[in-house]
Length: 257
Image (cartoon, rainbow, N blue to C red; front, side, top):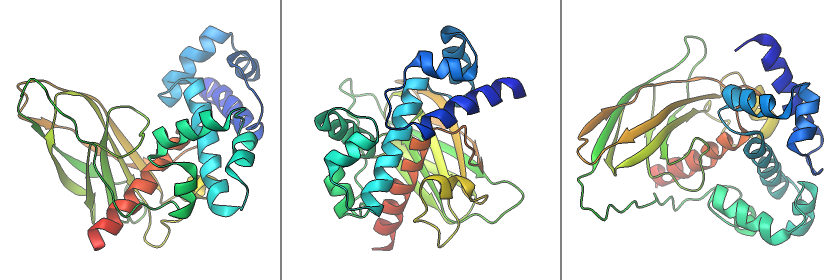
């Protein structure tokens, strides 16, 4: 992707962060990028992997997570600050994306120690597949433990369908994967920095993410390979990828208990 296009997309993303409480439209963001609306929507998805609307929603929810943990503002006030006109809509979207309601997220300090993987039922009785792969890490830096989650979408929402935690880069295995279309999302944070959120997380060169997908698991699939190359996080990554940090912390807590 050309540097000019990436710079245009960065301008649009910066506007999202700087005007998080405003009712931004696709037209507003396209004008900031200096593209037509249709060209903007197309190249934005090519650069970030998601639509402008979903990216903006992710930015708002990430800021809501930060405010819930770092302030005493009410859920209604936070909802308004991040651009929602309805507290009910905000709470519903927050829960569907993060896995718990805003109030519970605050009470738990962003960590669920009762990580429950979503159960995917296959009514046709097809046998489940095994997903195997290898996690590689950039040559520079030292990885902490690595969380791997299997999700039905490019942006992780709620608990993973399957998950694993590695102490270091290398092979991983996810078992009992039902037929469907899945995405493998991996996240590594340096030891002692699991509490980083938002801009601090992006600014840390040791914070790495990686994706692989879409992966199609058919009714007769037995073993599928999906390697993931971790890379430093960047401003063009959808911020809800940081939800991996929450799930990762939950998995580590459950593993330690």
